Length: 359
Length: 91
Ligand code: SF4
Image 1 (cartoon, chains in turn blue, brown):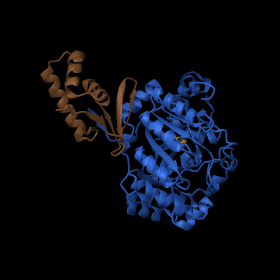
Image 2 (cartoon, chains in turn red, orange):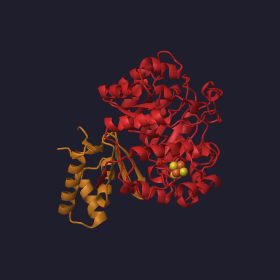
Image 3 (cartoon, helix red, strand yellow):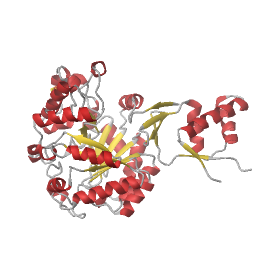
């Protein structure tokens, strides 16, 4: 029996690339959320909708989607929001996912889940929960716009850990969290949690660029790169390993996303609509829709600017970011910035499901 | 005496992708990939088969002697137990 200690082994990745199998799917169960995070990519209008207004898939429809994903070959499942804790049927959906043998990761703010739900999710043996925490209580609450949210999130993190679930604290790097991330790292270490620092901010889904106002400038980002490099041993890839890097992206090829109403996207950043699973079977959308076919046929040579870029080996190029900047095949300004920093500090920011992560 | 039966550890995820079985152990962020008869044994564990039943199936499928099949099965089950991928079902 062969064993590889990396979440997606080369063998799995190459089989999925050859056969166009989405090994990972991110399901946005809802866009509703009680928080009001400054940098959120979901427009406030979507977050504030009532359940009745939100036209979300029902439990039965999500379970059917899970069956279709399993049949397609999807192994890794990420359940995200909005705030997934607002779905009363979250446990039922996760139970079905585990019965269909998915590896389940939850993304949550941790502010809307009661103890009973958390304990049930622990018993269902979800693989991990990633909880957004932006630093110490006051600054955190200022970012979420919700007094007391830190305490709720952190309590949820501890409850998940007690239920046997691996906890990852996630912090988006912004001007506002620049002074906070060291305490977050200490907090994670103290409680045996993992942590991720996410340097990517994107415009909201409706094009509103407000989140970009909160970006950490180059000096701040450089300080984090230097500091975090010193704190943790993470992937610092050798030049040999980096050679042959490609501007191609997993989105729409070995990764897909499904929105709350059943719309299928290449990923949550790249909001090109491939079809809707309430109208058409997922397999049909994935293999026969015009848009999916166009994405499947993309090759490195199609990325004319990036394929010959001297920064390519250091670039966490995100096609979703390029999409939001107007040209999926073009360069993405934020990727370019991170690539330059990567080269400067000789460390690789690894693209990871939704966002790049630093550890 | 009742024969021993095993089951897959509850935390695992698994999928057959393009004909290849992948097993994820989230506790160690490891991906396991059993081959050939290993995959057959893995499936028979899921079905609750005993070792004698596995021996019979392997002899049919792979044209091997029962003694050899039993040795291979026991060795593979030991490996799975060592990696905590299976557990004995309490009788
Ligand atoms: S640095 Fe910019 S231009 Fe170069 S590969 Fe990355 S996104 Fe493309």
